[in-house]
Amino acid sequence: MSEELSTILHVDMDAFYASVAEKDNPELRGKALVVGAGARGVVLSANYEARKFGIRAAMPVGRAQRMAPHAIFVPPNHHRYSEVSEKVMEIFRSVSPLVEPLSLDEAFIDVTGAKRLLGTGWEIAQKIRKDVYASQGITCSVGIATTKFIAKLASDKCKPNGIMEVDQERVLEFLHPLPVSAIWGVGPKTNEELAKLGLRTVEDIATTPLTTLIRALGEASAKHLYELSWGRDYRDVIPDEPDKSISNAETFASDIEDRDEILRELLRLTEKATYRAREKNKSARTISIKVRFADFKTISRSKTLPLPISGTQEVYEVVKSLYLALKIDGARIRLVGVGLDGLADGIDGPEQLAFGEREKGWREAIKAVDQASTRFGHGSVRPATLISTSEEGPKRSGDAQK
Image (cartoon, helix red, strand yellow):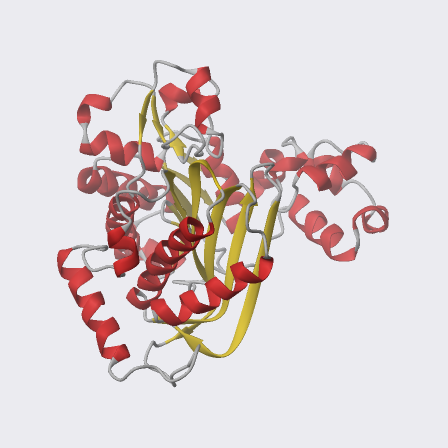
């Protein structure tokens, strides 16, 4: 008896951030809508009316405004997106426990074991789309296949608000005509190398000797592309893969040079990142910063600690020391960011002393702040430095977070 093939769905919300904004303000429906604030910020999402003018995610907001001056631009609301995402993921888990979120607005779902109870993969996809719309008033697109790779490609092809199933017998018929950029891992540099070999479609890669690909791309990359070009993807759906990192970054509305302003912004970003870490019961061993200059040159620095930490002040001491070590006073800064990596479970482990002995009760104070933030909203209790400068701090183009 042959083993049953997996049935994997890739569910992707349609223009998620923009769809949430339209749900919360129905007057925006039918108009070109862009989520992104400040001319120097980036577009986080654009609805399909705005996309008709060429506006895409990650595009500078200033450029998007020139492409569609009549479009409506709204600032992001990350807390709201998280709320909706949690509700959507609950719907996914009501169908199958095997849910692997990729981001707030997309996930893989292995429904192989759910088919006896809920029907075919197509019927389960219809149920998910119906439930998401009934619960949250937004649409999603679903790709159905026997592998994650093909399911993801299928959901891309049926957007917006569609379903596409690729049967195992039709995988190569579906896959081979696609451009090489459709394969995971083919970025601009790899695309350029493949073009030098005259390889422009997935079929071109599949019919090229592996030894030729290895000479051009290296063994690991060549084998990866070759396997996927034949639709071979052996990865399982991994439910609730733990966060690998938490980060927050800020693009300023205008370049700033003042060191104190930059340090205040780094403190604000540290406060947000550590709060998110503690919310997830996580501590970080590696602390990193990112700095982007006016000429777009970007540098990053990190420090790995012997023990994980989660307190705002102790993380900020590391962030501050990393920034001061750059010795870039007077440089015009466009963006700064703070990252927490090497995440470990728990926030009550052995105390890591950043500078000298921690004052008694510091951990209890952190817990009290978090409890107040949970009850009254994040930012209701803040470092005095941020409160006293909230009206005069640097103007921001909107947070980006991961």
